[in-house]
Image (cartoon, rainbow, N blue to C red; front, side, top):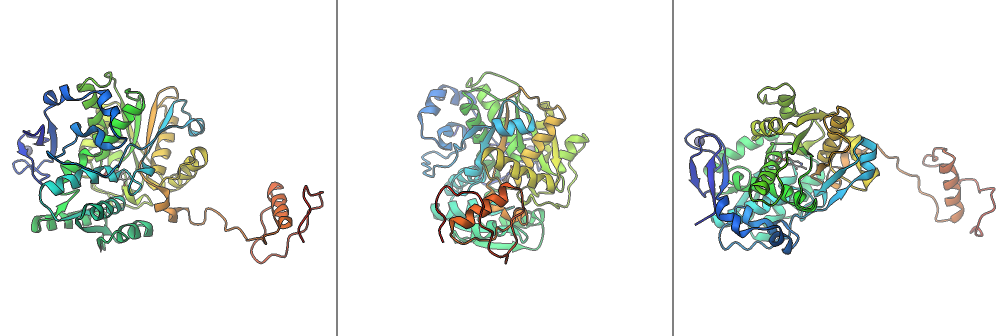
Length: 434
Ligand SMILES: *Cc1c(COP(=O)(O)O)cnc(C)c1O
Ligand SMILES: [Zn+2]
């Protein structure tokens, strides 16, 4: 007897365990439901803490088929306190959940893919696939290679070069589509109906989505089995934010943390903000045509948007969005203040948090966690032109001293092709080389 099965989110009908994401009776999404009473006697803080530092330590709360022995050590990324960023944006109790260093492909998508592939194996698929805004593509390709699946990856053609290369290198079949993510995703639904392929975010979506809960489990454990006051989460399809909420609810239900209301704050880029727009104007989701540099979040018709809005408003939280300029400035701010280089989604999160603090929706003394979900090395193109290309100097101490002096005196470094810099008039500490 399994401790979990698929259930319709609206009509409640049970669907057992199978690769399916929609209820045939009412066309609502399916979700994994657990028998918590049978799980409760088998879990404890001590048990989880005694296991290896990866997301499988919470396996009783994940949909893992019997006998499944996952080996990839993904998850359990650092939760860092961030006093310097806090000082810059006005929080005395700020934490960063740093999935920019999630393994194996440096985004939180490694979590959802790990859980999806465990189920793909169980359901007998030899080919896995996905529609992706970039990070999911990298993660499916990498984990498919390791687990011995064939992989077909469908992406909008305008993704960042690093995300394209970071898919191809794993030997996956890459299909670039002239269209946006929503069009790519629609095509994938059609293909999933025709072929026996495990689409991680289509027919395996309910299992995939459960992987996101591990972000919430880890945050609670890393805070000493406490829940924060606030959490700021970037939203694309809106799944991650709803699953962190589910994780916190499960921990309360199982007696692993003290009950506490947590405010959920959603973050989007203004150029693709269907969820934050719905929250701000208390309306239904209206699909948008994405136009933002935050490509990993560029889903104009979010599958879980409706549930994300409900999770945010029910928690007493809010949602905001920031311009592309603020995204870039926030990437730089996080890097300069805390030494973390995040991708555009992380810039969206930091920029949105700053806005929410200025709006007094998040207060300085409260414990606030920002979810940094991806790595900046994948989206370096957005920083093009932000830093000058330094003119090289000869490997001579004299030239370095001159350079140092010009920098310290605030003189702009000479542009390319400039004559040799003048020798410093100050007495050098060491003899100058000729
Ligand atoms: C996919 C993604 C998200 C959001 O995921 P959803 O669950 O679809 O809302 C956030 N950050 C990054 C970097 C992502 O790749
Ligand atoms: Zn139903």
